[in-house]
Image (cartoon, rainbow, N blue to C red):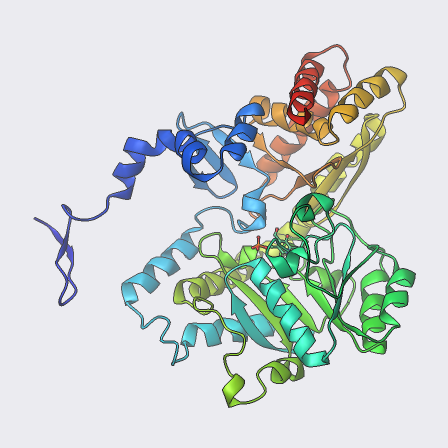
Length: 478
Ligand SMILES: Cc1ncc(COP(=O)(O)O)c(C=O)c1O
């Protein structure tokens, strides 16, 4: 019997009594759809089966997924943005294994952890403005948003939080109260009092709300994830100035845009906007261990943690756990060493150059926009009467169907996995790992080119699919 490890007072760990995960997956991995249907969420299983996304991926490496027949797929979703470094980056994996092997005194609670201090120091070093001096760690993006609401209220002694139409800040109750989409909100009210919506990219409307002087904070995604909406150049710096003028805090939600996604470390750097509070999560995980962080001004944090008996007035059991902190440190290390932020900017620019000609070439393509590797392709009603009639047919059944009609053959024919940028929207979002190379770029561009081209041909296979999607959608809405 080979002994793997021993801990005094516990039985020795051996090949016979370990939980053999690889064996478990080999034996039962193929039951995943049945298990989820029965125990987790049958509706997501129905969705995947309806659109033919019910794959059996068995391995992930860099920007690619592999199925059981070892077919390679290009993943433009990146786990909703967590795999900035790609899947299973060897440096991240090695760091995490080293942390486990070191048997560190994790989560002492009446203790503080060196790795958390080190990650906080690194985040402050790369923060977009020197006023950001303190860090609070969370286990997800939405928890970072929740914490920022509390920080803003504690620091300003005001309660109102202003958010944007179309915003997405997470789905727990506080962040849902700041969500700009009807679909996500429906059925969950009443929401947190004092949350007010304002149009994105509208400074006059923002000033009208802020001028009441009763706003604790304005929270905004520098580039909105739902729709890949990029503001005008003056919007964010001016919003920050208005917040300062009227005594509100300016919170930049960089949970999706942060850590190189847009070709800068932080998206606010494109415009020189200086937030009082900055939120990050997703990519900080290295794709392996959930983690988020709130970066904020020292005086703001001092108002929350104002004396010893308020030292843990905002806290989270797992917040500073070693695996998460090590994943964050490894992520920042890899971003720097592999120059991934510069790479994201260069690659994103090339993709825009490749795809912007689609606007002229294809009647359905309205816009191709983005920064770095956060790119949106927007479709709209075409000019040609024949195409317009087909578009209307789909729209009448469900506003998301046109994008689905592109995404399905993109996966089926080209093995490219992408997503609709927002419910009932006409934007497909491209959010690949920052490590993609020119062959991935060519793969993606030619796949989109081919599928978009096909949907300009009626009759054709793509529109047969469109008709079948429409009849499914009509049946579902009955
Ligand atoms: C901008 C933004 N904020 C917050 C969140 C919520 O993060 P999480 O899903 O980790 O709670 C997301 C997730 O997509 C996001 O894109």
